[in-house]
Image (cartoon, rainbow, N blue to C red; front, top):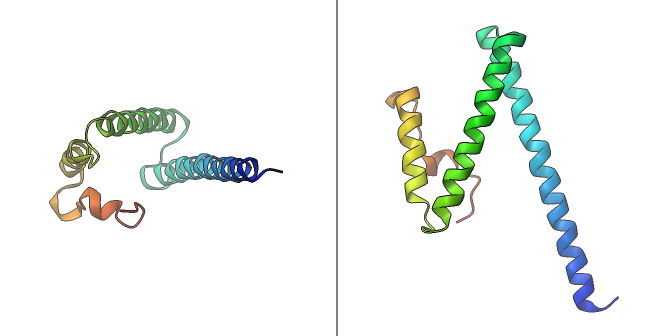
Length: 109
């Protein structure tokens, strides 16, 4: 196998593994959210469906916010500020951690 073909094969394998991991991790997060909603708020089939639909809506909105912002600003300052502002309103000052703290361990700089 030529060297460039081997490199392309390795890169494709890495992308596949990364995509599979992201999909599995996303589903684990959804499952955990449903279990927590049931435990903490005693949500059953009706309300947990509404919760899951709202969660999906916000995942998409946040993703779109960051994708659009990344086109013009590599620092994502607008997206981070927008998300932080909304989360701060919900959780309050005493429970709030800014984006760089919440994501700091997961995002390479």
